[in-house]
Length: 110
Image (tube, rainbow, N blue to C red; front, side):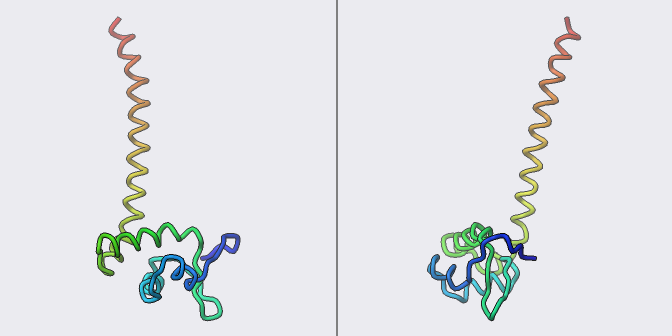
C-alpha cells in the first residue's frame, strides 16, 4: 500500500531520467518487483523505490542478468539483506559476550 506522505514519481519520468525504454520498467512494475500505484492510466512509483530500480538496471544492463534472474533476485535480495543484518547483530552480541566473560575468566584465574 502506498503512503501518500512520500513523493511519487511517474514511470514516464523515471524512464526519461534513467534513459530506459518503457518495456523494461513496465516489466518490473507488472511483475511486482517495484511498488507502484496506477492513477489516471499512469504508474506512479515511490521515490524510495529508486534505489531498487537502480539495482535492477545495474544487474540487467551491466551484469547482463536476464529478466527471469531479476525476478529471482527481487525475491532473494530482501532475504539476503535481512540475514546480513541478523549476522551483524549476532556478531556484535558475541563481541559483547566475549568482552564481558573474558574479564570474569581473568578474575577467576587470579
